[in-house]
Image (tube, rainbow over all chains, first blue to last red; front, side, top):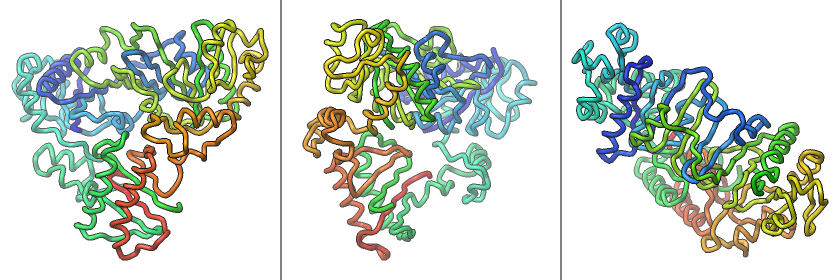
Length: 249
Length: 249
């Protein structure tokens, strides 16, 4: 799963840029999901008077509305992007207006002042209204989604990377950097996703509460044996954690 | 997680009954979630013109709208109840109008004709409008949520059981019955949840934090695969617990 965000103020061309990118990604046969961040304080998708709203008012902690052609899972709180992504298993996920998750960014803007405030080390492209006036900004290419969507999507394919962890640097800097720093280095091509050590050594084993050391080929045998079964089961998702317990707690 | 459904035609008192039950369950300190089935063909929570709708029209396969105080995960297809329940971890989940999932039922109705069409072996109570006129129907108690919600919720506590699998009888009848038959016997108190062999024995599997149900022969395959490797390692002790973790914590 590769992620990128499109960030910019209202009317800078954010949603239009995303529409064009999604259409192009789908044309290239990728599966695509998206998350739209809404900063409007009164945003409410389920309103007074519906039956689902009555469930909430009565105290239901989570309500789902299931229709014949859609299903809407309605949380009455702001979820973190990590929590939301548990529902996704697409090739690409586009984040609109999301600023609390670190991943490659496309900035849409009207003018250079807006770019100045937003372009950072995660920025891979400039787009939206300003991309019709300039061709780059501080070395970052400006590409209009209206006229150059193929180039913009080529760049997305080149610069995005498979979802990495998002740990605070205190929790993990096994690779020598914080997750944030590693992501910046990946965009600059100084490092690659495989430098993240979290995904290495893929399997851990405990017997009677004691960690058992395994040489790599034994690790692989156990890993392959478990995956051989788990992959065939409903609920299996590639890249997700697997836990097995045998016997007493 | 204990489930029950409330079923009945329009205006029979379904949503009112659910509101009263949810309020009473919350008063008793339980966590409660709910699912509302909508049979209206044109139901659409996200409508023409919104940015999230534009994502869909461009081809996004899954869209989430995240506001400051709510998060709405909007699937453009009808999910199965099993899929929806992967998002839930509540003490109770109330299903409104859901007829494709087998669990204890409360039937709301205007008259005996409606009861005749709906009351079955899963029915634990009658409620809604008719419960103000009769006190029972074919041995099933009739309790009004408006005046006797405490008794109704006592009955729910007595008759609901922890979520059981919902396999077709061809996949599993290890307990001697189909899942459907076992659930009926649990309501009649002839059997209990512990008669379901899916939850029994030696091996448990979680993927991405969710418990995965396995029919007994799949359990055995996974168990044998893990043991085949673990037995060969220094540190293995017969009969001791084994834990395996793959991927992120």
